[in-house]
Amino acid sequence: MDPKKYSAMLAVLISPAVVGLLADHLKIDEITAMEKFMASSLYAALSDEEQKLWHYSPELLASLAEEEFRTGKFTYPQEAL
Image (cartoon, rainbow, N blue to C red):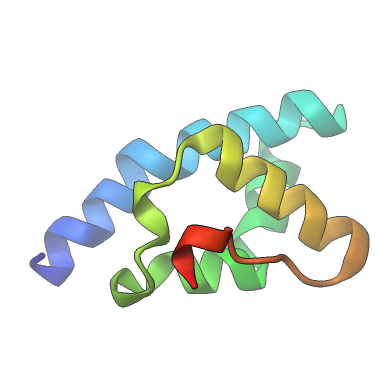
């Protein structure tokens, strides 16, 4: 996929959905949720199209982010390995 198209998809489709879920689950405002998400190693991995994390649901991505916030790392879903 064209890098510009991927960046747009990440910014418009994926990130807002994940941030909204994180804000709800963690009981924090969306700005704080966005800052935490964008600072995460999950977001860095998601930003790399070749890692193919973009095809996971926002719910799964939010749960991986929550795992990273709790433990300091996230576990790649089994099918990604």
